[in-house]
Amino acid sequence: MTAPHPGPQRRNGFTLVEVLIALLVMSIGLLGIGKIMMLSARANDSALMRSQATALGYTILDAMRANRQAALSGAYITAGVDPGAIACTAAAPCSSGQQAQNDLHLWVLSLAAGLPAGQGSVAINTAAVGPDAINQTTATVTVQWTDTVAQQTFGGPAAGNQVSIILETVL
Image (cartoon, rainbow, N blue to C red; front, side, top):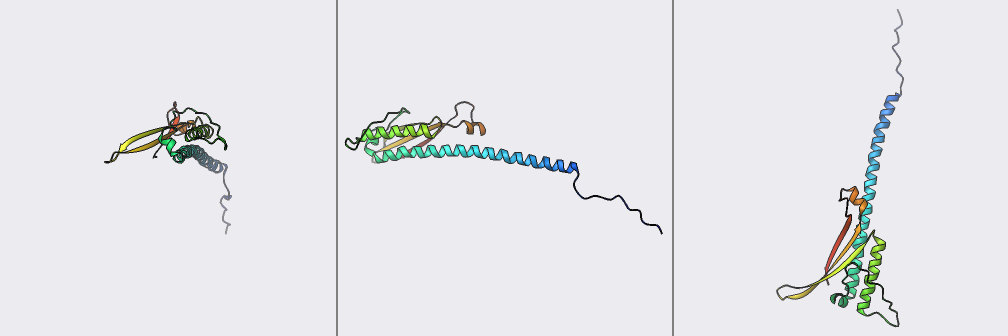
């Protein structure tokens, strides 16, 4: 009897080609994850600015509600111009009109500090509403800022990267 001839021995492990293919597949996956992380960070930045703009808009609306008579008389109307601060002290307190100017001044400074190219405007509209023709005063606050990164990332216009929110309330 003769001994059986042993066949070629197969070694366990990976070949170099298998390792290279695995690295290629893994690197493509990691690039995809990196792109998603970048888009997520840009979207979060845009959402943060939108939240800040909304909070700043509500800030001036709250000031108008606190100083309602001045708001109804139009002391808060602005076209995006910084009205300047008025010095009021405990000995010489502000009138309602001066308080409105201080509120607007602080609001414009907050817009400039909190948002890139942040600007704002306030408009007041009084109209007769309902069957009794009761005058209703509506305040409209517009906050604008530049959101270049988000506009470029998500396919917005190349020029004029101004983004705005408009808040409206009845005083």
